Length: 452
Image (tube, rainbow, N blue to C red; front, top):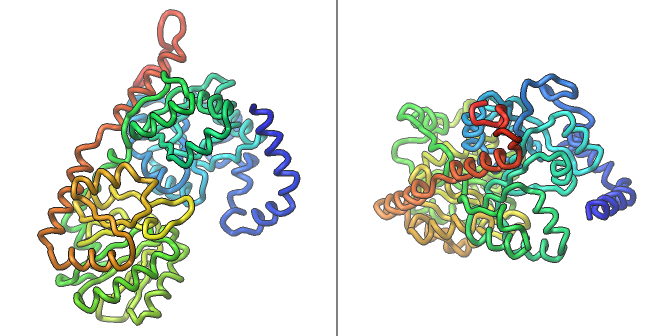
C-alpha cells in the first residue's frame, strides 16, 4: 500500500511541479523553509553524523496551537527521561517560531518537519535517529510512519482526535487506513467518541486509550498585580474602561465584530476592543476595518509611539505570543475561528480564557473543540452565539451584568481545573509502550528507564 501511495505522490509531483515549484520559490512564507522541509538543509544543532550520547525523543506538532499544547507534555518527558535529548518539529513557519520562543530552553533542537517524500523523510530520520516519536493531534504522514515502523521506533499519537468528517474520509481508504494507524504504538485519544471512531476504522483495540485532552494541563499563567498593571499601562487602559478581547480571529469575523462593537460602544463608551488576528500579518487589514468605521485604532507594536493622550478604541495585536496573557485583562472574551464557517478551522482553544476565569463567547463553528465547547456550555462557563446579532446582545448583556459575567467565568475555570491529568495518563502510556516494545532478555535497557 505504501508503494501505491508513493506512486501517486510521484505522479502528482511530476505533473504538478511546474505549477507548485514557482509558488514555493516565490512565496515569501514558504521560500525560507523550503530547503529545510525538503530535508536538504538541517538546522543547527541537528546535523548528520553528530555524536549523541542517547538517541533523542522526537516530538512533532503541526502549528502554533499544537506547539503550545506540547509544553506540559515536553516538561513531563524531560522529567521522566532527564538524560535523553528532546527535539521538537513543526510544519509551519509560525509554529517553528513559537516553538523557538516558548520551548527553546526546554528542548535540544527545534526544526521544520520534512515533507512526506521518501528522500526527505529518510535523510532527516537518519540524522536524528529517534528512540521514540510523540506526535500531537494531527499532521500524520504515511512515509514517516512506515519509516518509523521499519526501524522499530515506537510512535505515540498524543491528544488524538478524529472528527466525523475525517472518519468518513479515512473509512473510504479501507485497509490502507488500518495499516496506516497500526503503525502507531499507541493512540491516546481526547475523548470516548474519538476512540470509538478509531475502533470503527478497524484499528487494533490494544493501541487505543482515552487519556483526555492535554490542553487542560496547560500551566495557568501566573500574572502578578504588577504584571497586570504593566500590561494595562502598555495598552493605555484606564481604570474605568471595560475590555472585550476577541482572540484568534479570521478574515470575515472582524467585520461582524466591528458591527457589534459599534453598537455596544454607544451604550458603553468606555469599552475598549482588543482584537488578535490568528495570523498577525493580517493586522493591517484588520486595523483598516475598524478605522473605516471611525474608531481610533492602534497596533500593539506602535503603542509606545502614540501621541494621542486618550486610549485607543481598538488595539490590534500584531505579534505572536501575547493573546494568552491578554485574556487576563478581559471583562468578556470571545474565541475566534467560530463565527463563520472556515474550511479547516472550526474554532480555537477556549481554555485560554477559562484559565483566567473569564466569561467566554464563541460562535456556532467549534467542531475542532467540540468536546471542550460542549463541556463549557453545559457547565454554564461559555455562551455559544449563532450570529452577529446574538454576539452584540451577549457581549452587551455581560458588560451590563458584571455579577453574571463573574459567575460564568468561575464556571469556566471549574471546568478547566477539573479536567486536568491528561499528560500524566499519556505519559503512563508512553512509558508502557517503551518498556513493552524495547524490553530485551533480562529486563528493560538502562537508557529506556525513566530518569535515564
